[in-house]
Image (cartoon, rainbow, N blue to C red; front, top):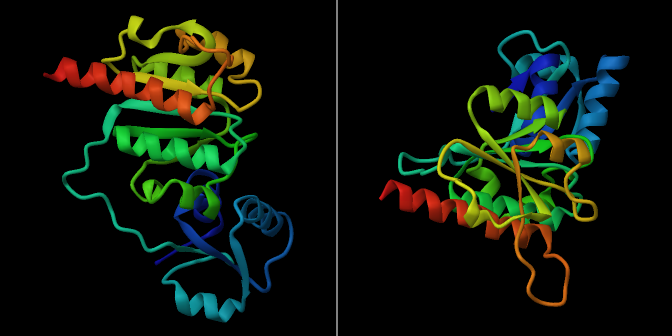
Length: 237
């Protein structure tokens, strides 16, 4: 299956690159638009195939403007999928593909409804991420975002409570995680950005009783996410 046209291809590269197999660019396309599509494809490690315009016209049923993208063949979630639309996870500055993949696997297992990934500073959903996630990327609703604060403000207008992960935060079992919530997790080295911490309603962290100061981000995220699952299951009876 193909999507085609400059704007549809660009938006797919920005927000759901994990759904794309390769990108096709007409051999007569030049200029800023071609460079932008090539740059986005390179960032997400997607194959770019320069294709004769006549061949593109045979492949698609419509105006392609010299751009098309081939979708991966995936299995859509079935009717028993239990993703919770009121449970959102937001990720920023997670640079290790293995951490990102492990975290996405946790999110899918916990039934998270959506995962928002800050585009700048975060690893792309590359083949390495897909492999570590063990199939979770095929089932999760993943969206790339450009600005965390803007997205948080929008979610707050929709009556979501926003919690940020921080080593000095309150234990998660002291917070009410049963309603519409967003859990925000930051990068391996510095955690959440300072501005993101400020816009969160509350910061949550895990008490460290041993000698190390913190956990790996995917391990800490798993603990926080499943505390939310525990509370939500209990509340639903």
